[in-house]
Amino acid sequence: MQELDFFDIIMIMAKSKVKTEFKVNQQIVYPSQGVGKITEIFEKEFNNELVAYYKIYLEVSDMIVMVPVNNAKELGIRSIVEAAEAKKALNMLSEDFEPITSDWKLRYQMNLELLKKGTIADIAQIVRCLYNRSKVKELPIQERKLYDSAKKLLEDEISFALGKTPKEIESLIHEKLEPLGSTPKIKHIIAQDDDDDDEFDMDDEEDDKKRRADDDDDDDESDDDTDSLDDSDDDFDDDYDE
Image (cartoon, rainbow, N blue to C red; front, side):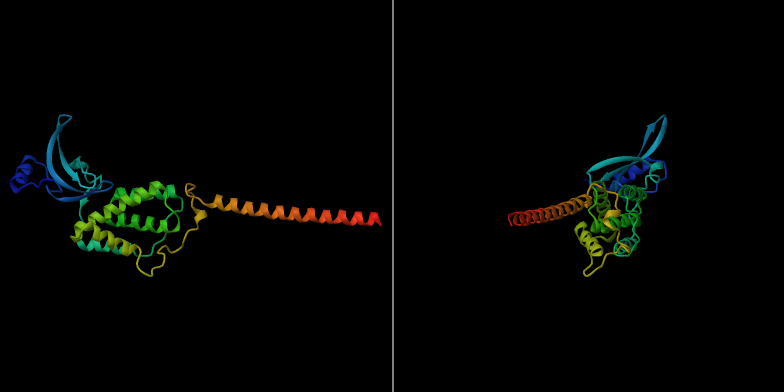
């Protein structure tokens, strides 16, 4: 996307009389959407009133969105964090933590709320939680998509904050989530049958195997009983002949 020169920025800012938290060409985080850049601040008439808007370019989806300035805070739009805070979020990924509910639907809603809040700590918490949960049991499709979105958002923001490429940050995140010789970071591993997610539940398969094994045992016992009866019949025939 073409960069605006200094004259263009001055002209755009002059058109708007409202005070804004963000400036043109500033990188921002739009939770649930990704890292973006303010390309323009303008006013547009709406219901006979002039309303100030941010025009935001989202590179991850190659989209441009327009957000009313007064709604930006409510939507969780914020500046890219400083390097120190980005490093702190990275370190969170390798910390021990208490697992949240084993009900995946409730867990999904709780993590979705964290994503909407959109602080870098919230996003790191989602990534840590769902990555470690996936080590216990495969994630449902909705949670997998949520994990991918949160991880991408974390990678992009830390990339900007530390001045590194997304690929470098992706490797750093993996190292924090899966350090060499590490043990599971969840303090108490939740058993699989505690999970309410039937989508990937393997209990039924195990039950079927057990039932088949029991049936085979019953068949063997029946064969043994038949053999015993046959032997008894032979004995009876021998006695009768005598």
